[in-house]
Image (cartoon, rainbow over the protein chains, first blue to last red):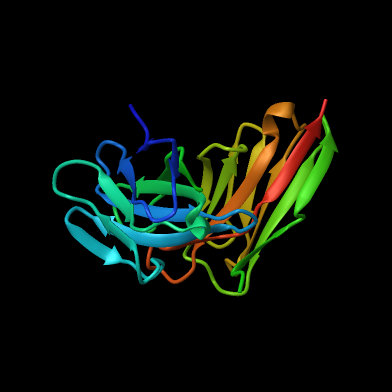
Length: 114
Length: 111
C-alpha cells in the first residue's frame, strides 16, 4: 500500500529555468495539497486541488507558480523562471475526502536554485 | 503572524525520561494534527484530534486537545532515541482544509 510519492526527491536548477515537481497521491485519495517549507520557516500551505479542479490557491505566489491535477497522472507543481528564493522543500499531501480528513505527506522535493 | 505557537522550541532529554511539548492557537481549531519530521525527510502522521477534551495514545505517545480546542500537548513516556526529531503541529484553522503549521519542537534524546 504505497504512500504519497513525490519525484524528483532533489532538483537543482539555475536561475531562470523551470522546475516541475510531481506528486502521486495515495491510492483512493482524490485530494492533493502542496506545501512549501523554507529554511528557518514553518510549513506553509500553497494550493489545494481535486481532480481537474483547483479548490484553493490562496497560498500560491501570484506569478511564476502554477499547479494542476489532471484526470490521469500525477499532480504537478510548476515553477517558471526560478529564483534563488524558490529554494525550499516542497511537500505534497493527499487525503481521501475534504472534510477534516488526515492529510498524509510525501517525502518532499528539495529544490535548490543556483 | 504565526497562527500556531509551539513550545519549547527545542528540548534535550535523557533516554528513559518523559517529555511534553505544546502547541497553542489563539483561534478555535477544526482539527489538530501532530506529525514527526526527521531532518531531510517527509512528515510522518502521528495523531489527529478533533473534539474538545479528546485524548489519543499510540505506543508511548499521548496527545491531548483542550476543551476550548485551542491548545494541544504531546507527551512521550520513557523516551527513546527513536523519538528524536522535529514534531510539527498542524491545524485546520478555518475549516477550509488549509493546514497551518507551527515551527516545530526539536527533540533530542541522549542515550
